[in-house]
Structures are given as structure tokens and as C-alpha cells.
Length: 262
View 1: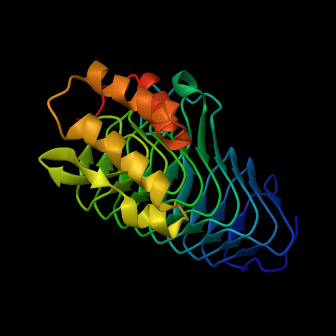
View 2: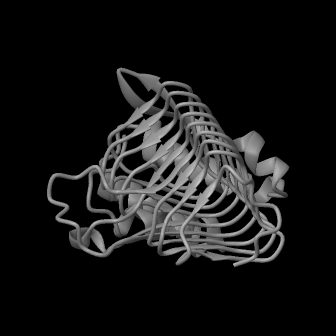
């Protein structure tokens, strides 16, 4: 274990594995079964419980609670873990829980995400890359979040829901169904689709043709009286004309366990 950069007031278990160039702030606790990759910085008053693996060059600010036991009454102390990738920003009072034995055993966080203050990721969730969780956004257990998703402040996602890549969830939205890729969702008692996340797609290099195909798919799903099977048939036509993005939407819709948000 490299001692350089570890504050004398920090408590680091001898069984923890600490990479090169890691810094640990005052009054932070690092437990057994924790692995921290090179260049990661952990601020003061944090707690990191294992089994937890944290990648390289992450920044974890004060009072974050990483790798805590799942908040699930079925948990009986079985070995479960949290896996965090590289270059994530984890701000003050963020809570990231380990998985459950019945849920696959792992909570998994990708790379280059921002978790702003007071955000929460519950047991058995999977979060992709390049996501932004604004203040107080929360995931219940078993939620899957694709790449480049933005959750605005105070957004909440029901257990077992999925949010597709490039979706935007508005402030205070309560999501209780699957959100297909590229959609923008806003609050109306429960979250309801309000269009596609066009501005975000432009920022990520989607050209006008791709966005037009996604917009046409959105209209088929949400702006007419068509039943879901009828709308899916229209999406098949758009995908058949060469839209890989709409094909991704179809694949997403076809693999869900909860009803589609409509």
C-alpha cells in the first residue's frame, strides 16, 4: 500500500489495495476489500466499504459514502460488490451501494460520469459512460442507464426501469417505466415524453438525417393514436430504410420487462 498522499487522520485498512498517486483526505475510512486505482483522489470524511473496486483518476469529494450495504431487506450479508470505472467525478454526500445476491451481486458504474451532490445509485444498478446525475437525482434498485444520459435535479427512477442512451430526464421527473434512447422526459405527475433530446444529440455530433429519423420514430410512438404494435411497425419501416438509431430504439422496446413510458 502506497502511503504517500494519505492523510495521517485517515483510516485505511491494511487489506485495502491502494494504487500509485492515490490521495485520501482526513477522517476518511477505507475498508478491507477495497481496491483504488492509480491517480484517484478521495476527499475528507468519506467512507469506502468493500468489496469495492474503483478505477483510475476518479475524484471523490467530501462526505461521499461508497460501497455501502444495499438498502434491501433481503440482503443477508452475502458477498456483493461495487465496481466503478475511470475518471468519474463523485461530489459531496453521494451514495453508491453494492449489489444484492438475488440481483446479480454487482452495482456497476462506467467511465467519465458526473454524480453531483446528494445523488444516489442503489443496489444492482448499471450506469454507462458520460452520464450526468444532477443534484439529488436517485436510482432505485436494478435500474439500467445507458451512455450519455442526463438526470436533472431531483429526478427519480423506479426499480427495474431502463433509460436508453442519450435520454434527458427533466427536473423532478419520476420515471416509472422504460425510457427509450434519445427521448426527453418531463414531469406531469409521472414522467411523460416531451420530445426527443435534440439539443443533446446535436452536441454529440448527430447529423440532421439521423435526428430526423429519430424524430419520425418519436412521432409514431407518441404523437398519434396508434397502438404500440402499429407504432412499432412504422419504426420497422424507418429502421429498414437505414436508421441504426431507430433500430436501437426497437431493440430497446423489445427487450423490456416494464411497460413502455407512453
